[in-house]
Length: 313
Image (cartoon, rainbow, N blue to C red; front, side, top):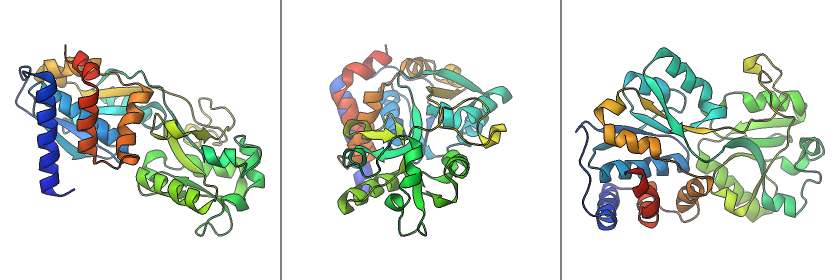
């Protein structure tokens, strides 16, 4: 997005909020609320949605790219104010480690439950490209089905950026599928959806990392059924890695000074509670409708005034 388009998007957001909400509420501190952006679309769009709510209340907002694991230390140090998508399975340990050091507070939990796992688009199941799915045992007989040009004849799992989960999936593949399978890492979340589109166009199967809530909930995505997760099964926790992923919560983190510097914004932040459907809608505006994150946020706010205005009261 160029600077002109960014300014137009910002102006559109401001005009939209003014039009739908009337007189803005009184501001808290003039110090900006710093919101991090990561590398998946629901998180970035939600950043601008929450920032738009704060701006409607009269606050200043800044957005900064941030490491998905290191952001909790940044919040603890006061460089970042909030983190609005804390996924239990991926970021829970970093979140609680920062809380234990002091400086990070738990600002509540979204209604949406989460699952981060690898699986296949619904059409792979519908066309029976790998009989026996979603049971993971079926993959052992479908190596060729999931082989790609970069997998040297092995079945390929396309993971997200390695910063998201480290070696969780390589460890799982080694424990449950063996040397006939390989894990490749995508550079961004968007690369996963590009692979989905290419695979469907080519009529081939693809096995990728995904999550819910996400825009793919609407079209259907089937998660692989691995052995059930239990505490301690992952290699980092002393296990072999031979287990699936846990379902978990989606929390909100904040710097401990936020309630004092921006009491009204913090009160609204604790009330913000998005469902699976809402988060999927935010992501779909970008991934399906091809809107910018800023424009997607502006549209979501305009279309859901009754939802977000309740948070500010």
